[in-house]
Image (cartoon, rainbow, N blue to C red):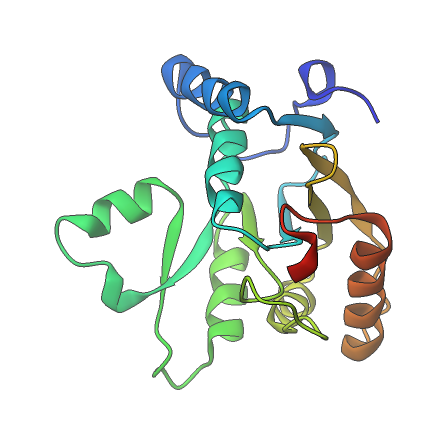
Length: 198
């Protein structure tokens, strides 16, 4: 895989930030000893799944990458968290409010949101927890199917201290099959910061 210094850019990716925020992101990665490798997908709309999720450091490293790249990766948060003055902060950082009590479920809400915008990179941690899991939650696949967009693999390679921008994963559109194959790929290929939890 190529170093991200030469292949980080995708003309399709939604962007945010400026020179200062990119410098801060690079500083975070340098201070923590992590680097980015691989290549971002040339997609205007994509579900980005990040795993293994085993440590509180995952968020710090992920935000360092996002800031360093200047890419806008959206993430879901319950609408109740979007109160003043934090609501504006969450939205600026990529948060999208979801209503878990609405008649249409979160999958439908996110699929509708993705369809309504020109660019959408939605980031999801499929484990849904830092604890060891036997199966991933399937919401990321249901959103991808409903919005008809691909799933891109990003891994926190704890052994080598690398954030790996890996590949678009081929989907069969069978939830059980795709979820099992993606989990097996992560398990075989990557170990997280705390491998005993991943």
